[in-house]
Length: 139
Image (cartoon, rainbow, N blue to C red; front, side, top):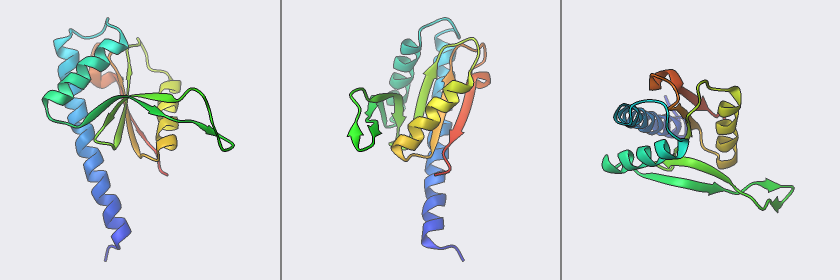
């Protein structure tokens, strides 16, 4: 028999997975319509934000995340490119290759927010799926 906490976690994972599938589908559309790599990250982020809105998927742009050091709030917050459904963090890149630091950046965002799932979407690849990295925070 499944306890309530286990069921709650499974339900949350289903929502996160559905949102990530919707984001990936929207990102592929953006990549295709904009002609693949060659633009600035900010343009891909704006286009993906617009595409998610067109699909009635809840999304926020440039969400500020405070950073606390020894009970002191640091002056400059971190900024998430996109936050989808209050559950999935999206980091947009437009690089020829993905670096480990991009994944580490999303993992830091996940830890600071207490969220569990993030995606790095690198629009600098010829095929978007080659620039997709799923990042999970085990909490």
